[in-house]
Length: 262
Image (cartoon, rainbow, N blue to C red; front, side):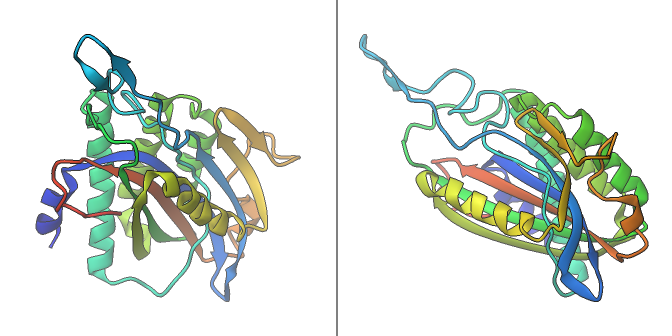
């Protein structure tokens, strides 16, 4: 099945992402404990310039609205829980994570879909969640360190966070117990509202947001010198870590029949 999905992913450009790390108690999945977020960017697209000598409207060099990196938002904070996913669902998550890594590499090299000449393109806003056993402490440390050091104020920095977060998940398959995906396609002028709706829904499940690095603004809960997405004393109380990646995808205008979304 993954081999059938991969061709559909080639026409998609990553615009934004959200990723979350939190602990959930197995006896009360809706009562998330502490969490954190990493992200930044916006859904605003610069105005196209007009060249009178016959060039017509043209998009800025380097891409449509976001140049050589991710200009749309991405974060690292959400809680979600559901029934245990099948092996097929887990494999889909793996395929998407691999796709994210490959796409970020292409965007960083400038293969970002230049010349997208319409004002309200279709955007796919999707969410991928992976549930891991709470003893995946090395993953917790990786994401805590990433949150404390990430450059979320630049497109290149946000691209790095997306890549490193995806790689962190791929490094710990032995802890996977759950996987799910959802997506919705919408116009650009409505994509930000949908993105924020999903983000706020997850953040509202936190009891406490202990670490935040959004748009180069690093905030830590009082008393946490180094900052943690998850408190150490909650590791014994919770049985799962839920990592959520929220992504905005811009579909290229040519291959209109390719509608695979996260």
